[in-house]
Amino acid sequence: MSNLETDPAEVVCATGTDTASRVEILTAREVPLGGPRAMTVRRTLPQRQRSLIGAWCFADHYGPDDVDATGGMDVAPHPHTGLQTASWLFTGEIEHRDSHGVHAMVRPGELNLMTSGLGICHSEVSTPATTILHGVQLWIALPESARNAPRDFRHYAPPLIDFPGGSGRIFLGSLLGETSPVPTHTPLLGAELTLEPRARVELAVDPTFEHGFLVDTGTLTLDGTDIERGHLGYLGTGLERIELIGGPRPTRVMVLGGTPFGEEIVMWWNFVARTHEQIVEASDQWQGRSERFGRVAGYLGEPQRLPAPPLPNARIKPRTNPPTSAPQ
Ligand code: MN
Image 1 (cartoon, rainbow, N blue to C red):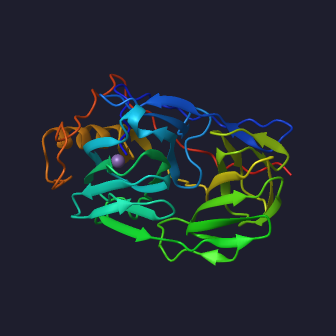
Image 2 (cartoon, rainbow, N blue to C red; image 1 turned 135 degrees about the vertical axis):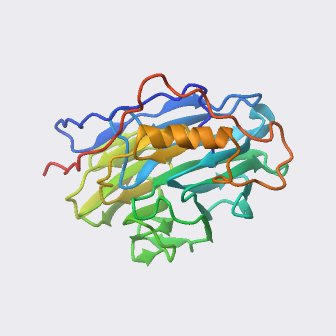
């Protein structure tokens, strides 16, 4: 997906201060995707409070939307650099086309992971068969060693695993004894878990990871703190076990984890870079139709490509998260 804000805000990260609870709640803000479509997403990353969880640097959550009312998703070709996009659906179907030559369908419970490297562009359109659209769009920042690497695309349909109190799919990294075969450029975890009503589940986690729990349906009590639907509960490094308790109805949650990213990034519109100058260059090259981003074949909508919004007048400030340890 594209960040379609016409005036993307510059988000400056502040060091998190902690309270009695070691869970930090990242509340979602509603962002209209603009254009003729009325689709609105709930964004929990990035925000002032926290820019990254591991290498996860962007989290948009949408639906369940009645496509008849919202028009569904129709995002014209737009560029990315320095990141991976992880598309994950609960309901619906999205047709993906990119300048790596990939034409793929995004379906519920299946990971579609696109790696931009230095530059890629892609389009995303919900299919005519889709009546309800419901999912998340996640971005992963690429470390210095991989951010100029070649384009790539991986599809993976993880098995549904059962555990006492629920079930889930592990699409990146390892959890609950299951490991995804999809390689990552930094240590990462990505999973969808569904808890049975009132279930109490203790997850064994990597203490070098920080974790985010984005609540899709139901309510979650995370390590003693209630997290409402649409919000994200964050826990820092240093934990070996994390307790989840489901609400009165089934609770579905996305788990995003990883080792603190450690590199300062500059993020604007659909670009992740290291300096303001690199952002300006990427924007200019997209506007100039540089081969850096290639071409998408087969997209039939209008416009044929999304223009970059005007660059901010001020220099785009870098963001970083000082590694946060969970207070014991
Ligand atoms: Mn995109």
